[in-house]
Length: 376
Image 1: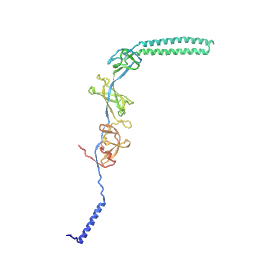
Image 2: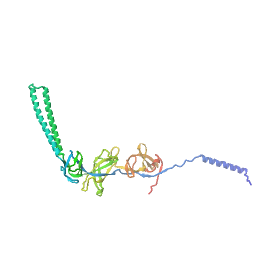
Image 3: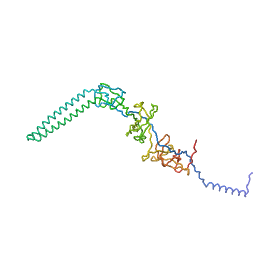
């Protein structure tokens, strides 16, 4: 059975539909702006710490006076007077070559000198004779000049013969190899009746009285922070970690390998337990320097994750402004790494500043943020 709607009710329903449509159309026509999303960031406070750093580098000990000894002349070894590890005194004869060939060399040089001297006597007399003849107009000027030149040549030959004799006598003296200072024979590579060439090392001599030094190879990143006269502590692991004060006496200017440079540290104390070739650890202390060369005593420590790098390798962090709750992009200058932190030079950044420590690549300058609550 169909139900009919009266005219008045039909009109009321029509008005209701029109009004409802108007409200719906009005509501759809106005778009609401989405609420602003405020990012929450992890953060930390910048701490001020000392910039002094310590780098441990392996090294080996050696005497300050240490040398390899060799003969200055070649020959056959006749005597070896010392043993490996023996203590010797300055001037002590360590080994000798067969002297006979050198004695004969001296005699030959002496004979040559005698002949040259006799030639001088003869040519002097000849010159004096021509001089007398020239003065009496019985010899020409050319003959006199020839006699004078012959006499001068003879005198030069005497000087050459004297030099030859001096070298022969020197070679004879060099058949004895003597200790240049007090020390201990650390290397012995010589035996009797063996031919030795000039310059081949046959002994190693360690002068223990002059003290010990340490040779180490340091990377270039450390070398630029070291200077002659700087102190360094030397640790002896084999002697119950005994610590000895040292002073840098040499800084190498040429790389050995893998960008390392030789550095010498002289020990300021000496103990009977020290031996050449002992393995040690050298503690180098240093402070970074500013662009003007002044040492930077204190710096700022920040996490590595707080730094981001842009073009030209410029480095930045985001500093939180508590008044505006925004972050500001701030350029920094890093000094060095220390464990998991980066040391930063004070300036644009200061102790107590709050910086973002995660997701910094997604932040922009002036962005509004919230600080995450610290977790205990």
